[in-house]
Each structure stands twice: as structure tokens, then as C-alpha cells.
Length: 77
Image (tube, rainbow, N blue to C red; front, side, top):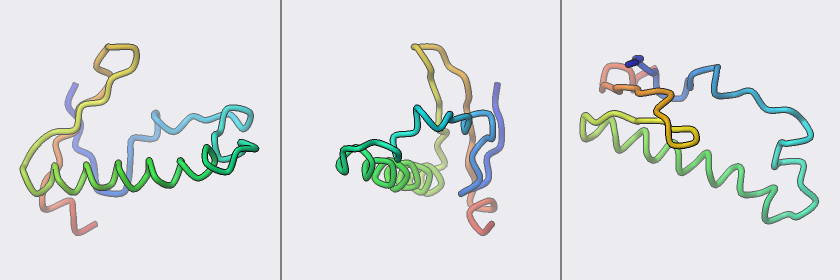
């Protein structure tokens, strides 16, 4: 399962979050703030994959659920 992923436009299937499970709603400010840190880390991984012509592989419970090959052409979007 290989999909072409455009930079800054993740697969919508990965974005299903219920309000009660959203860490941004945590009463702990460190937990709530970690969401943005994870977003920055994910973007850094995407940038590195583009620079090195590598793929990003996503796993859930040890099973591969997605693989995106990123290209320099998509980085302009």
C-alpha cells in the first residue's frame, strides 16, 4: 500500500480524533502542549524524507497501515 503524500496534507484517515481523547483538551499543560511538539517532529520527519528521497511508514499496533513516498515536486505545495 503505497500512497503519494503531499507535504503538509496528511492522509485524512489518520485524523479521526474524538474530543474526549484529544490531548489538546488535557488539564495538564505539558500534555496539551505536546500536540504541537509532535506536529513539529512529524513535519521534520517529512522534510528529512523529502531531502533523502525516503518513504514515511506508518504503523498501528505493529501493523503497517500506510507508506508514503515523498518527492521534491510535492514539497512546493
